[in-house]
Structures are given as structure tokens and as C-alpha cells.
Length: 150
Image (cartoon, rainbow, N blue to C red; front, side):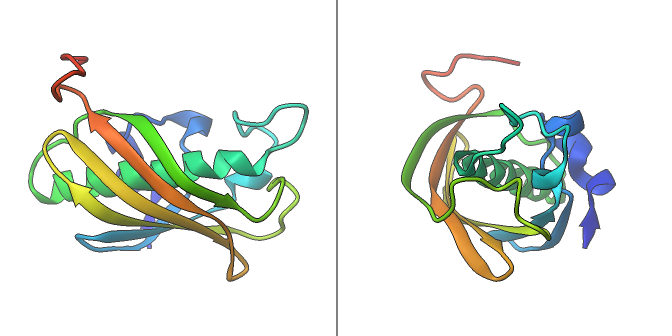
């Protein structure tokens, strides 16, 4: 397992906004991360002392960021910052997640990746049961239409 200290500096999500705790495994096409951040009182996505299931989309998006950063590092490069531009086919099986005991397993599968965009399918499980899934698209900084945002 790759500890957060190995890769957190490679992504834009810092401090408590870095929601993933570790990477269980990853390959050129997929990532499996794990986290307990959904139970933390300082989770920045909480409102009214509740963390709603819709925020699992951010967990999926962060798995994309970590995966892209690990791929870039392996190639001797730095990943370009990305901007989430689309969520599709999102399915949520629970209303909230702050009351779930035990870690979340976050899976991302790269469906397509170019110099300007990425598309992933994501799935989040709790205790082996799928609680969220969907697809996400990210446009990378410097991509046509995004301008240079460095």
C-alpha cells in the first residue's frame, strides 16, 4: 500500500481536502484507494454535521487525480492540473456516509486518457458493498478551451 505521504504532494488537494488515505494498488488502467476520511469531524465536505453520499463523487474524482499523478511520476513528468467537467451515470445507494463504520474502498478505472482530458469510471464500496458509482471527465489545464491556468 502506498501511504499518503508518498503521493499527496503530487495532487492539488491538500490538507483535509485530500480525502484518500492510501493507495492499495494501481496499474496503468486502474487504481484502488482506501480512506476513513468520511468519518472525520474535520472533513471539509461536511455540512450541518452530515457528509452526504453525493460527495462520493469527489472521492471518485480524487482517485483520478492520484492515478494521473502516479502515471505522470512513473513517466518522469508532473501531471497537469485538471478540472472536473462532467459526471454521468451516477448511482448512490445511501443518503449519507459519515455514519458508516470502517473504511471506504475507492476504485477508478481509466476509460480514456489524452494530453487534454481523462475519462474514468469510479466505484466506491463500503464493507464490500457498492455504495456509489459513475463516470467522470476531466479537462486538463492547457487543453483547448481551458486556457493556460498554471
